[in-house]
Image (cartoon, rainbow, N blue to C red; front, side, top):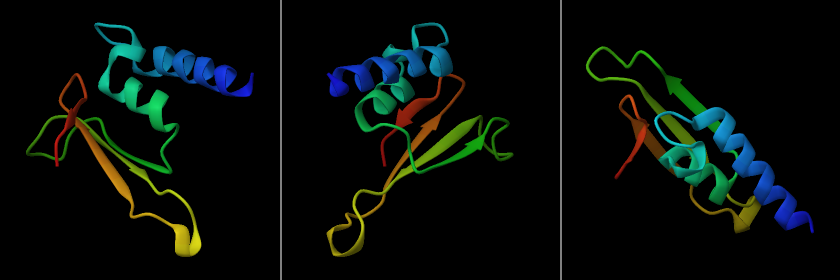
Length: 86
């Protein structure tokens, strides 16, 4: 089953890339990655911007042409990269 294989691949990737004090699939970034897949763009700021700690901005765009939905932007901040509400 292709859907199951893709889901398992995303879990493995999340565990490999987003593990910290807990498994990657349990982190905010891991759960978003498993649910939405890879973002179209990641803006990483591991040292922060001078006024804040580390953060990442993930951008997703769904569809193309007249069926495109607005861009979805998610920000993860802090040393544990928690999802910030916007």
